[in-house]
Image 1 (cartoon, rainbow, N blue to C red):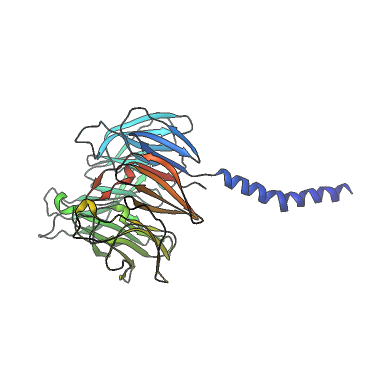
Image 2 (cartoon, rainbow, N blue to C red):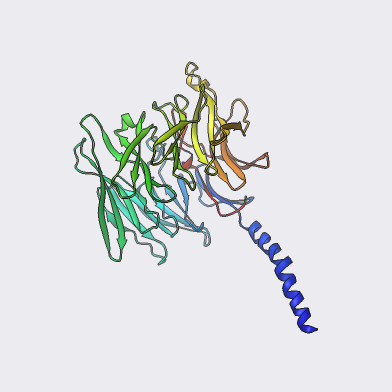
Length: 416
């Protein structure tokens, strides 16, 4: 009799309590956001907000893979740093509520590894790497010099880097793989991008891998004045043997993204520095290079985001090239079904508001809404929208293109 009772209790626990425990644990896992308000760093977890710097000038908060750390730049506010490109790199530990200064003169393109608590960064053209696992004190090691740009390799074993062959303007661009070994680095050239006499490419963007890691996308970036109007989107095979120039677009790394599990690359194409003119969403199938545009005539797109292999979200507005720049139509968010060809408006800001940078997280859609004076974070779930974070600092803008990563970063560790 006792054995039957014990067996009953065991089965009851497995069949009934375990799902409840699982659901309870899932509800405890919530999204975290790092954002800038009045130029200070704040954190929001669920419905709780916490200010973590006081009377500073903070930009580019970025979460570590495990959500324990936030890396950010601290800069001195002057007219020259209104749009900061470098500053002091700091790390904030959310568990012990402590800040650590790492280095000065760090470029805004600092990056966490995809799985490990390792952060890498550029000071001028010197590449550094810092592994947080050994603990304090943090000692950043120099990895390489003469680096134009870089990204972590998908397995976090090292970097893919770009560099100029020489200081001459028309010198070729070299792509190399740097593998981190104990007490040394192994550098292996993988491709050379020829720069023709009539071209002025001086750098690349970061690098992005397709889901199967067979193809890499990146931008070829010309000198500053030319880069404001057109940059060349490129596709590189994993072995470096095949490189294709796929199209022209603005110098915005958020505007080209791979599908989650297909070799489909979505990007916002079009030349000209004005973000509200001549910008269309195009999907490229790789390696066939077949292309399809999904922007209706008379509209302009930006801020592409994948929900799954068949659905994307974009910020879209009517295109009015004749209107005064400040009076051109503002964007809202559209859902585009690539296979069915259906395009549906899903956010409805007021006439004087705009919705930017949609991000699909599970069954929720998150975006930034602004009237160009103030900005807030909104969430849409089950056709109901709510304001999640009020009054974040306005990002810098250039011809109506807003650099929202300066002031907002989401850690997608669970439910909102």
